[in-house]
Amino acid sequence: MLRLRHLLPLAALAAVLSYAVPSSAETIIDEWDSVKAPPAPVLKEVTVNPATTALLVLDFVKQACNEKVRPRCLATLPAAKKLLADARAKDVLVVYSIVGGGTIGDTLPDVAPTSKDPYVQAGPDKFLNTDLEKILKDHGIKTVIVTGTDSAGAVLHTADGAVFRGFNVVVPVDTSSSAYVFTEKYVAYHFTTAPRLAAGVTLTRVSMIKF
Image (cartoon, rainbow, N blue to C red; front, side, top):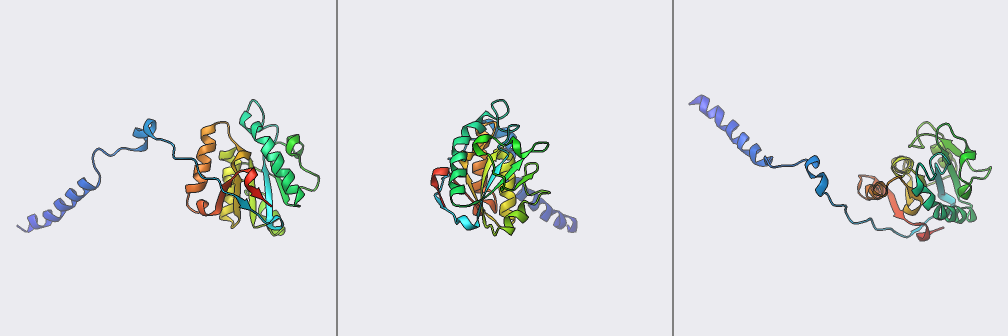
């Protein structure tokens, strides 16, 4: 009788667990083909303070932005060029990045730097093992506008790093590119749903940014 009393709670627990985890439950692997993309994120108008804002021009270099490697990057150049001109007109700090093994001279002519523009050389996260954070803080920067390629590389990881370092982040999606359109949409969705990032990143387009 004593043994039966000890077994009853275990039997009840087993019954609860059997209901909590239905045998028909599926994982994402089982649902790959049925997953539908969520609606596109809403783009918002943004007004920034030129004195405390920096424009990050990430990896617009011949190695990463060309017809063979990432032709979609070339399509973003007109918007990036306009944004750069607007930023320079308001004396906004512009910071460039280049890929490993490259030089600042590899930057595409449409968005070329001046001799005064600082730059860093790094992998996807432009804060990692560089002076980017120091450059921004030395100039009193509170907001960064992140442009460049790859959207799932330099743009995503540098924007992440900026948010986690306390900066406000603005991402004009018409200046961010990947090799695949799905990746670009995924990254935009990630910015609006990921913990901490959703509160620190504003998605917009160049025509909706005011200095």
